[in-house]
Length: 421
Ligand code: HAM
Image 1 (cartoon, protein in one colour):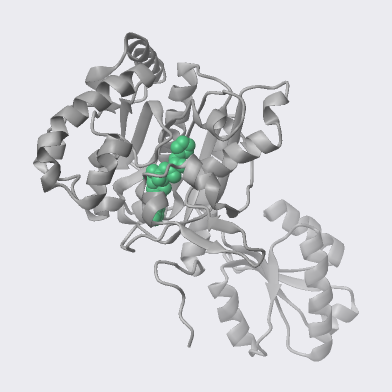
Image 2: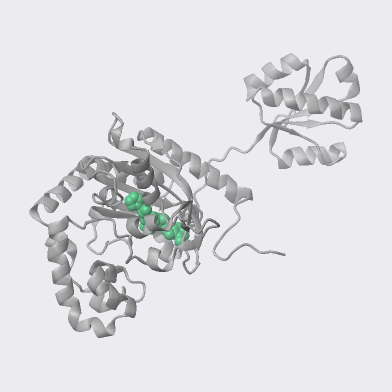
């Protein structure tokens, strides 16, 4: 038997039903917020992620699925959605559209070569959005509110929003100097990666998977204490708009995020479920006002977030949230003889074209077995065919709840189902 790849899962059965339900809920929330759907390729030029996500991030240095295609191109399976959406925005000149900002949402498979564990996969699915073309702090609050509202609507409790500001260039410069001064005496105690990060991007030391939990890192200076006046005012405005939306949040100076493109607002939405451990971060995002320019586009400000669909499903399961999944059949068609079967095939076609969800017997079960199958499929009505009725243009229909039976014509059957479903 050939097994699936490590860190990848098959989605089927009840899990697949939950999956689709959650995807529909996500789509509906994004549409209420007036975001347009965008779908970009899973495979992109490797360079996009080196420049987009950042050369000093774990995602790019250790976790991408990179390979050379048959045309000798360096390509990468996307580890996240933002870089691809920004590339599409630039390549398709969306900045030229009259309607701005561009509010785009997406859902899709991402790949990271991580150590697989509960809630952390190598092939996983993200949903997210990017708003490109405005630096309005009210949009930061809007983007933060999307996962919060989604989780509320879907039935999750114990959801917390943590926000921080990474400030602007002036902030970053002041902070880098302070952080380097602080870390220098401890450099021998830190891992090789952190030694390299020290010159390249000291901020990355703070979310190192090896050193991140050490006291020396935890006590390091916090960027929020170095905000420039402008960055601080901006952050205050974001908080004001969050208050206006009655979104609860906590300022957490430890949130730096593992991707290089962020500045100003960064945030994470976490769920307080003990069993979730490391997988409790259901969504994260932030502002990235330089990335569009860095990817050779116009200097447009942007913000977005992404959430893990697999993690959201895990959280729903751990929190015992029952989803209102409708998987009942409208009708199940039963028969015995070959001629009844032929009519069953034609009736099934007619009913489906009229918008009903129906199925029929395909396993040559006897009638008793067909009744059981109809129950398994949660059929609301049973259509029980027999040759005599068919000859007279009649069909017997039984309500599987009330057990009432009646005989109707084909036209009456459609009206009857219309009225009852
Ligand atoms: P990220 O924090 O790397 O951000 O990922 C966002 C979410 O994807 C995480 O909070 C988590 O729920 C889920 N996730 C990440 N890695 C895995 C994994 N290996 N298995 C399962 N779920 C995972 C980004 O990707 C940014 N692009 C977000 C963003 C959009 N920032 C601005 N715009």
